Length: 381
Image (cartoon, rainbow, N blue to C red):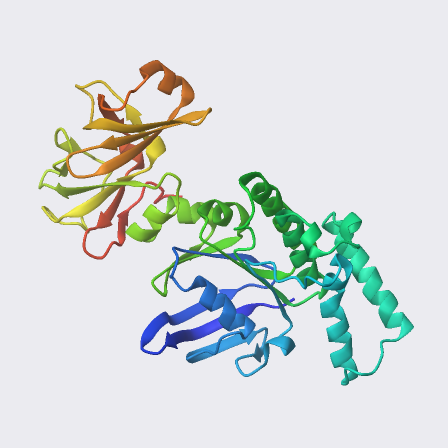
């Protein structure tokens, strides 16, 4: 097991800069999740670590060893891809054992020297051990065409685990699975990583996976790191407007507003000016435009005289334990997340006019130009 350190990593394809001076340290035995929208560079970063792409500039270290110049096969890194990449003509047993046999052959420094009886026994022990941990022992004699998608993914995981590498790299390994199987396999991967204590870097665009799996999360956008922190801090204390809007389902609501000399908020979507004693305006400045943010769960129905905003109901999603309401304002859309009981009590219909109030103790402020977070409600935590 070993930490992974990226120093000034830049990657270009022609004149197109995909990653820009990435500095990141993944601690020994840590489960690090890279998350971001499609095209942000997260899979490319994983491929650079694996050696499947060449670094344009910068250095990659595995422990104290610089690995830029090393071939993928000698980096002691195992990668699990979005596609299962199983050998169709081999059984599950041989798919898992293949990497181990190659490893032993390299140690002998000649592929044509047959493995000893002891080496074959060790490979068999390792395959059986991995198959048991992944609950696929009963599938060892099957071929990939006889497996379901979830079973294939577990075989791919088993092949990587069997090699006992210093680092696991996982590139959206659950994207081909259905919702229930994703949830089950997600829990299984986390448990396995804690059991094996192997440094793991996991790529996903699914924020639920990122929040529930990672010890820390790296949020990427357009080739730049936006924030590195624990899942809870990423959610509670986003570094900027992008992180706040990307992490959370439904995403954070945003309204353009200004602050007057009395410390009151004004905006076209607000029914009236709002006085907020807790909100620091020192860094914002009077009449400087900024973005007001609040989570869907902090927007609740209200009476007209107490409301902050009025909107038209565009969509109602009853999810059992909760109801999501999509509202259309003058110049923006907002989402509210309310309990199922409140949803039944109001019984909103598409086209209804409704009044809403947000929790003033849980609002966020972002600079309208840079997107930097100027205020969040967890400053003292």
